[in-house]
Length: 177
Image (tube, rainbow, N blue to C red):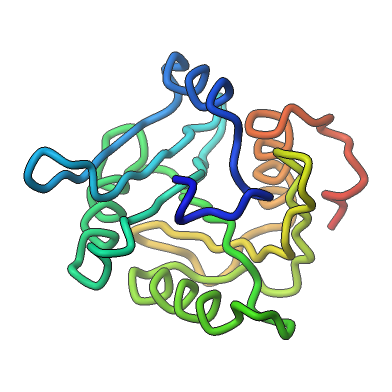
């Protein structure tokens, strides 16, 4: 968790432990030789047709072995997820950063799995720590993904993220489309 996600995107251990207790969260781990080598955390929004792939990571020395793909595919097959849209917040690769190549590689990974980027959206992730979050892009997955998504539906998903994930107000001006 700490290796794969920058401080600006990591929740405290206390917040993570509270997530485990909430029934709308789905936690999945991949293990080898009794060691956890990857994990995914999906939040199924209450009264919504969407969920959020809140975190997913694979240990550095176990990457490029199909573990991330396996975790993603198993996550989207879960009964709680299969009929919903899955959202993924991904570090944007639209500006020059020291880790731009990693960001581009990460987005390509999700695209290969069938995710599409929400074009024209300036997504602002609320802070989860004292560090400022990076610029983010929002990706969407569904087994049968339509060509377009109505703004009203997208707005509702952003409200879900802001309220259920970050504890923000549903009328936060940062989610205006």
